[in-house]
Image 1 (cartoon, rainbow, N blue to C red):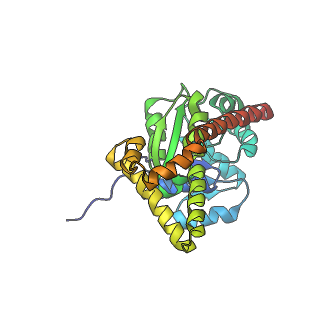
Image 2 (image 1 turned 120 degrees about the vertical axis):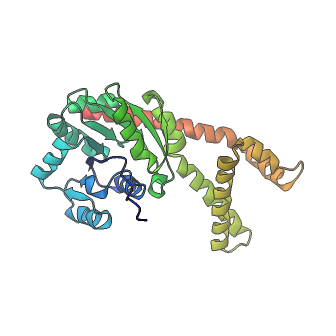
Image 3 (image 1 turned 90 degrees about the vertical axis):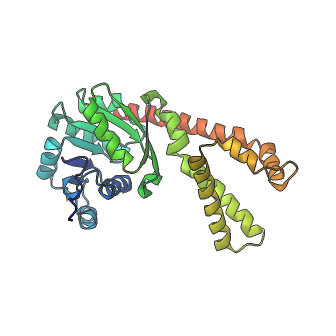
Length: 288
């Protein structure tokens, strides 16, 4: 018996205004998980026909940087994902505003740009979704914070969630908590990579071949994350299970405690959030 092809969750056009790596990661995830058919995805950028040609060939999406065609896509798409660089956002949003009808949903992956700023640049109280994905979205293991303007209705909320659930975990938050989320999940992969660098270096200094030290470190970090995820136990409980009194693990942890590791990580997250706020304020001043 022949199986009917699965029907995509979203059956209308989604336009990506910006065609960089984050946009590509989201598109790849949506297609792989049958959230939307590739023929209903449109990718636009400022000028690189070569990049759009590459994306059309790779994913079967549509794309153009011809001005009239771009405006037509933007005027008619039910969902527009803003994925350009912050420096290009003001000009793009001011030009986009007059093209939009009140029911079109605007989703942003632009770091530091608030809903209020976006609506101000658009010149109208458009339904806006602000998001903060992280780079792990490129392999379907992202963590994305999502905040909604009051104009976003329930079907549009579901559409936005479907898009980002295709590339990992989503977490709906109040917009004023977006910077804290940035400090944890937005920039968090970098903290883990930094610790991995140190572990690999320690292995090499201890006499392990570089490739072996790297392989062991990667598997250790992966296994630790999976243990927390699959057992449901708290990290503190799992840490205690592998820490024998007066053992080697305890000796290692005592060194980390002496360096105030716990509070240093908290300070790093807080400073990241603070810097994200500073950048947001600077961006607002520049755009106004």
